[in-house]
Image 1 (cartoon, rainbow, N blue to C red):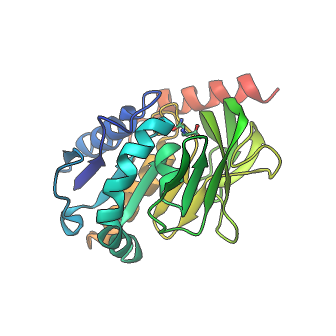
Image 2: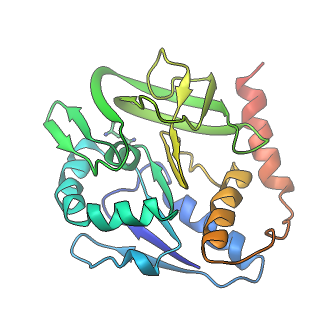
Image 3: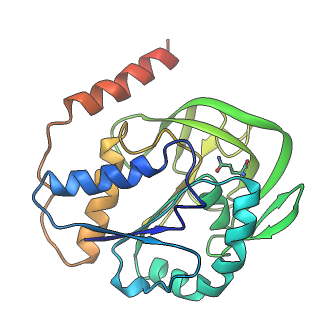
Amino acid sequence: MKIGHLFPDLLNLYGDLGNIRTLQRRLEWRGLDVSVENYRLSDEIDFSRLDLVVLGGGSDREQQIVCQRLQTIKDDFRAYIEDGGVVLAICGGYQLLGQFYESSRGRIAGLGILEIDTVQHDRRLIGNIVLDSRLIDQPIVGFENHAGRTNIYRHEPLGKVITGYGNDESGGYEGVVYKHVIGTYLHGPLLPKNPKLADWLLQKARQRAGQTGELSPLDDRLEHQANQAMYHRLIK
Ligand code: GLN
């Protein structure tokens, strides 16, 4: 399996790199082949060679730098997604999947692949967050820190907010799911504490690559304890 990490030197906040490590390790632990390709802004990206694409979070300044490059890859990226390509996009990366991010620096154009948009507000939404998602039978736990409020219109959210803010402070929902794309505000990093979500992504990528059968189970006792510890700390 080939994982493409887009612009890790710019989009990588609050341990987002841990998501790549988790995906990599969970394949290695099962004896499956995996390689990670880190792309810098100037690198060519051949999406047809990738099974999973990860975009991390970034500050407004970094998003502005990345945005110009995204315009040059958006057709290929869209084709990959429409073909069922798997994507995990965190926070700043999530916002960039949409039409635009309106910030105090002006309007940052997104990839326009999803019909969502984000507008910055003065007050940042910061704190731990718990979601209930239809994708997995385990609460999703994480940490959010964003000034943007995202409107996902008719798209499906990643989950219902049990505690925390999510896409905006009042809507009650967090993130987005489209085909095999997950966009979310959750850092943490997200995947170490949410192993079932990591396996959801890996399973979709394997299916798309024509590999049948379920992923073999791993000893996830520690991961489940980490998830439960956060859940019980936040939900009394
Ligand atoms: N700059 C964006 C915001 O504040 C995204 C931040 C992030 O990736 N944590 O909304």
